[in-house]
Image (tube, rainbow, N blue to C red; front, side, top):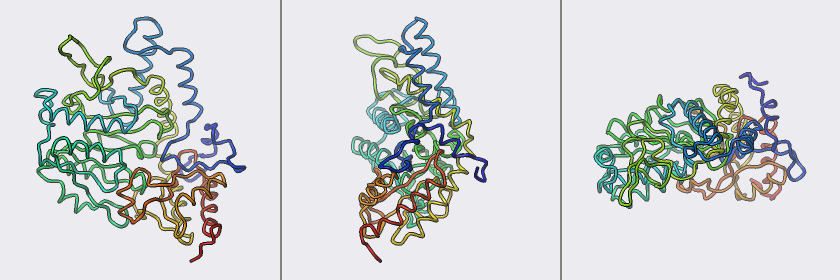
Length: 424
């Protein structure tokens, strides 16, 4: 048991996949930043629903449909509570990417005059500005590029310092009277640094802009209270927080969701339809057209109950110890260059370049020893370009990661250059 009173060996036992060997070695899974493994409790919850209660929600009046609807909405309450929100402010999406596209396209629909007077305040005019950061995942960059192209808005970006922290002085100059949206990550998926969300939200609100948060890399690792952070909109992804694929959440302040016109349209999100027009439900159902991800939502609720039972402060403390072990160990390996090596609040995620060896070759050597990491640009090409790279190796831990996992990873990395006969 570590100093935070957290028992990772006990936690690890809840994850069936981690008991296997890969290439003749015990599996060391350090790719949680890409997708997390699922504890048995999550698998059981989703399977139990499919075995016992599977039915369409918000449609039928029969017993199974009523029970499925109750479980589905209970899942919404549970997940909303995990991020400090009310159930009416949580929209189910199929992932964070869809959530960000929903917001960007809904603002575009407002710009096109859809949504009436309530949406008019969200409309963009040519010359208005959307501000992002140099550290964005492509999912929080490309939707804004597209929105700027459709509306004539200007896309600007906040640079990062050499140590990976955001240039907040530059941000204060970039965010001005024409800024309508400020979108940024809570935690960079490459750098692992926790950004100053409240400060950035205050900067946005000072000029009347929306603050949009990508919380994909924070929701599984930090205590999270989105209303307290004072962001207007935020997204997170279920498969990165021990939950199923195909489910995510969009949190929005009530008045913002009410002002956004719908993005996807069809069944389940309407009140009245004629052959010529339709009226839409209030949020969150306004944004949930079509077949809902029911079993996935129930699985995600099980995942947040699991995290709640562990205690998110304890999870963060455990992972901070792993993060220090990762960075301290990598600093001892000849040829390693850490990306974003700032002394700041962080999650257990590190990316690095190994001199003389391509990231993909590093990943292959590690995989041969049963160590799973991510290699490539991690859907963050501009950030890699900022550091003069096309690819890096990323190790990202989770609740089940142990000190032994980290040490096995470090031992494997230490042998890579000699394997390729690369010397200083």
